[in-house]
Length: 349
Image 1 (cartoon, rainbow, N blue to C red):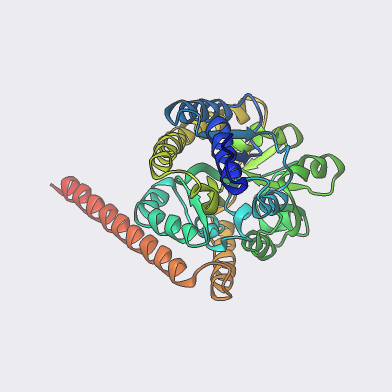
Image 2 (tube, rainbow, N blue to C red):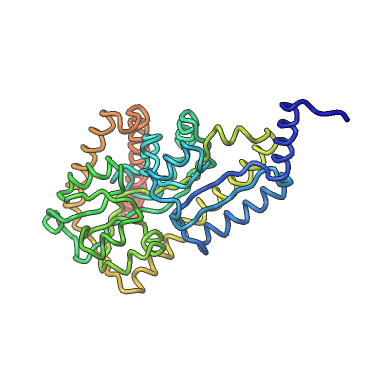
């Protein structure tokens, strides 16, 4: 009876196992089960499995069951996970420049965000790939605003108050210090306990984030000042992605890219609706004084610049972002002046 050489037999068995089980992409997220994000991602995982005929299996672990961002990154390096979802600060240990858009008080409106993203998203995605991570697009999470159990209108209201900053988020830590607060760094999974115990007195989050994580049940006021533009993204280790055939890579990229493009589009509307819901549930909206906003912005932008020069983000990309914003604001100011002059001329006639 003919016998296969042992090495060849092992190869055949390995290939057979691959065909039966496929390549698993284990992906962790803090997003709770039952959320719209999880439903869309599970639908995407099913589509990928069907279109690759079982060669690619996307397995999702929701609700933070795989631990904090740092724990998840460690598991990714060890090969226990192949990917995860993060916000900008969550991936800072691996690719610090992804925090660029989320540097505090950089953007003043979503129109400014759109202008900059159109010109710089591709640069950030390329930078991420250079660190060995594959992503499928940036998703907007809305503007994080300051939430607390006391009204905030002036610097005196914040003096010495304990504010949460994401673990490892050096840019937010510096900004909160510049605004006169006492930052307390915690992983996202510990924030609710921090609010319940008084370890932290102030949090910043988007309206959607506050509701999904139930933080809105522990605060009474929200300050109507865009502090941080929140972004999210899914990343997969390039070495794991490269285990897929080129055809299967194209399928995964097409499906995930389509899903994330839709997330980016729909999240803006979701955040608008969530902002209204906060008010309907009794959260009180507070408008800070413009003079205080200008002073906060000056101090925070000084902190941002210093951190960029220290290498927390790529200083050249930071300068490019600031240049884009200056150009946009100058054009908007010019358009407003022209409109005003036209209106005045009409009155004179």
